[in-house]
Image 1 (tube, rainbow, N blue to C red):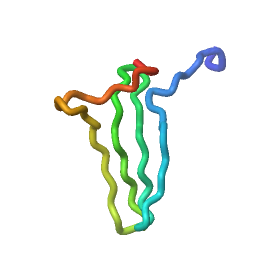
Image 2: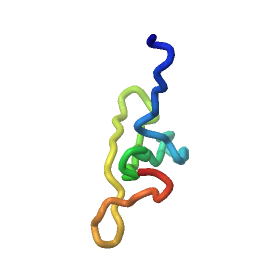
Image 3: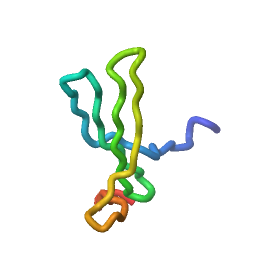
Image 4: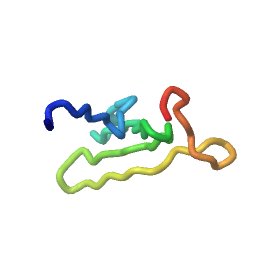
Amino acid sequence: MFGNKKVEKRFTSTKLEGTDSGNLVSIITDTKTGVQYLSIGGGGVSTGGGVTVLVDADGKPLLNKDEG
């Protein structure tokens, strides 16, 4: 019953990079809307992180044309 349901991922990570300070930088894509977000994760226990929407030159959300 439960094993037959296919679960689709809502978000995918499309790119990962490391910075000199040890932070992880990735582009997260919402597979339903195509909207892309920048995610920066802290490199250590005491450092923070954050997520923000990526925008184009007009201030509109940047879309991954392969998604959404």
